[in-house]
Image (cartoon, rainbow, N blue to C red):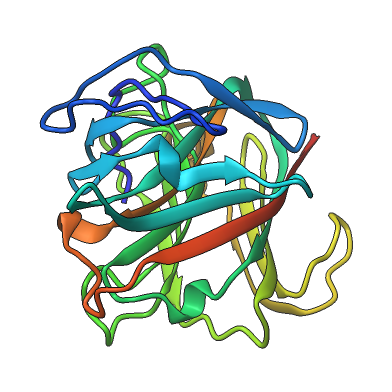
Amino acid sequence: MNALSNAPRRSALGLLILAALAGPTVAAAATVQFSGYTWEVRQGGGGPGPNSWDARNVWVDANGAMHLRVTKLDGHWACAEVTMTKSLGFGTYQFQVQGRPDQMDRNLVLGLFNYTTPDIGPDGTNEIDIEFARWGNASWPNGNWTIYPAVVGPKPLSTTFEVSLNSDLSTHRFTWSADSVRYASLNGLHDIGDNTGLFRKKAFAPANAQRRIPQNPLPVHMNLWLFKGQAPTDGQSVEMVIRSFKFVPQ
């Protein structure tokens, strides 16, 4: 689900900054350091969802892991999102996750992806997604791999599948080149090049790759949010931990 807002983002690391959450607001972004990169932490309101985004739902712990949380703050549900301050190009993108995205409430979405910027293209283009979500329907598969095209017009490339992890540790990757995107998901924590625990893979290599696959460097995003802004059906907060992010250029 790609309909991200370009609303300003703001970080915490202990700072509690109150902001008006009624619209696509607010103050200038601050940053956190994670896996050797600088990330802006979102504060304010807007899509996807729409949702409220609160910097208190993001922090980096003493072991260097990034925590993302959806919880009720100040009487309303609030979500978490971080955006890398630089853009990365072709190569392998790896996210090591601690938590059980396969067991999330049907209204929760965990996104690990890159995303377009205004100089590259509009919303609905230039995005490569790993998403865990049932999109509000408990019977729908919870694994989603989607590639939004480089230009307006072509349909996204996508596949869905059921994810059932064997522990709270998993690794998820995509390798992006000019003519293909290759995905892989693995049980356990593994470095790039180690395919132990592989349980799902998929390669997209369309004939018209210059239009169907993004061709320009893009910033990485990670978010945890509520589909259509709907509260978890169980009324419980959720937290996911990104143990590490790694990029190896092509």
